[in-house]
Length: 44
Length: 466
Picture 1 (cartoon, chains in turn orange, yellow):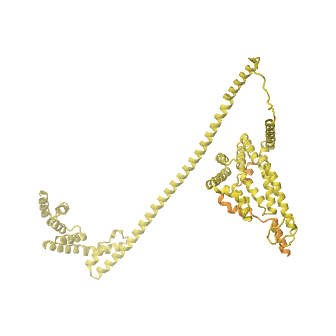
Picture 2: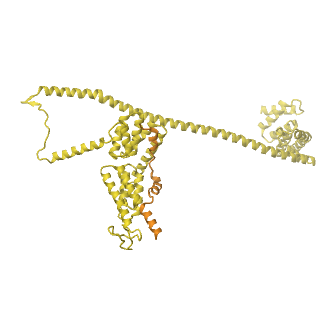
Picture 3: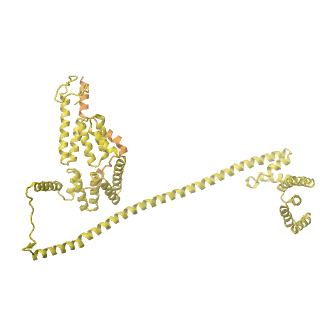
């Protein structure tokens, strides 16, 4: 049985055009290659 | 592929960088994993498993965020789900990592080339967010209307379909919820939210898959039929037999027509009417809500106006009080100066100041007593002096001077009957007969016992006759 209130809470507002910059910052996180580079640099 | 050490382009197949000879075997493995996730996403996207494709692409980018192909595809999938801003953000990041030969250029150009289209997309996103806020506030009818508008403008907006279905489910309108969820499933076949809602409604979540299979088979069958040399049609039972109409076929046809007509009258039309009534009711609810909002705004503004008016009135009273207090201070200073002059023997100067002071406004009894003493001593005396001066001016035919001086005399003592009479004379002789009559009348009406009563009466009679 679905709990309506709980389900409703799962819906989040969609980002608007003027929030594009924040969205880019959020979406552009570090990846494994960066971690690898860091490890290699520390070794050297 | 770029070498992580020197940043120059190198062949993917080599274990060592062709420029700096560094060992890039580990890095190569990581890039390879990222590409595998990307390939997996392509397969999923092809069968419209968009949620699955998003998971794979996010994994691909977590491994190698420079994988612009994965990023571009993720943007496309977001666009397909109606999440335009998320799509734009992916393409902007992609363009940032690979400035040339990047497909993101093309996508960004398409979306951004039409400013009005972008503005409409943004307006639609705002409408969705508003609908969500209304749903959270418990205004389900408003939220449903907004979501319908959102879906009408952007039929691929998955989240809008799902939210609308959830609201229908809450209202108990499972049929509409199911229809909305089927549409959502056509956009993204394996979205867990859609599948959960369908399961909640007791529907087979894989029905769309089955429908698609059937549609695909029919399509293939249709193509096969088209390709066949001799088309195969299923022939219906003959209506004509030996050139005559088959009796039973004709009866069945008539019965069929009658059933069709009745089903239109009893099933289709009432449903259509109900749909129109529901639509009308929904619009009425929306209008009532807008009206209620406007009325509450008007009420708020009117309350604000009343409050501001009250505040203005209070401030005006305050200003008045302050002005009066300031005037009191000025008047009291004048009074003190007048008293000083009187003490130093300059009676006329003292009287000139004191006559300007409104002693009734003073609270101090002592001040009033001092004022009365000075007034009794000075004002009448000065009034008589001024009367004499004025009369002399009159005799010397300097009428304007006479009138001015006699006015002064009456200022110090308004009951000075002599000054009133001379004023009448000066005005009459200078030609201002109407004003002269006013002074004569004043004397005749108010000072019957005055020695100037009779002469004033005579002048008045003479002027009246003229």
